[in-house]
Image 1 (tube, rainbow, N blue to C red):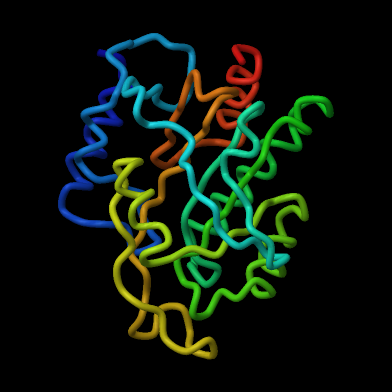
Image 2 (cartoon, rainbow, N blue to C red):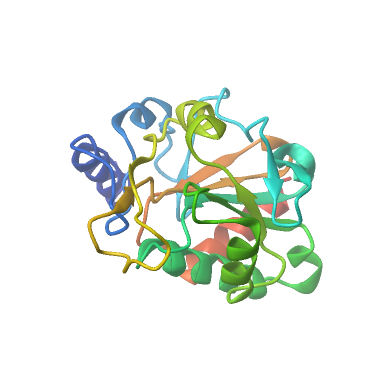
Length: 219
């Protein structure tokens, strides 16, 4: 077993205790059932083996108030992440890394990669709030309004923990009594979903870029 694979399995054991409160990314234990048996697959993240784990059939409202189908970009790579805009650490760091990774790709490849952020805090994260927040990272990021019943089924499908907790009024500080415990996992869906790679945290910009490029080359 490779050192990277061992670290992944250790993170799964720790995650079985609970979710991340926007600190250390975690994923729940059931995803261990879909880890590839390969030890040298060439990815920085982990290649999933379960053919049922594919780009979700999910239609959510985007920041322009229009329905957006996550399967619309199936000819390219989609990076999918669930969070909320007032998350103090994991969410902004992840979005900054993902958008930087896309910018490091050749121009032609950048056009084939979609970064999609789904907010799990719709009471605070209105389309306007999400759009303003995402524009700090990249104006091309797709912002989607999820949360609760809108995304629970998809989180189950992806073997991710459901979001728990609450966030106080918009003028409260992020750490004041309310927070959302949510998955810190990033899914990379390759063209046609032939390959799906998951990142559980600690991924560098260069590693995201490498995995995106590899998925595009194999698509």
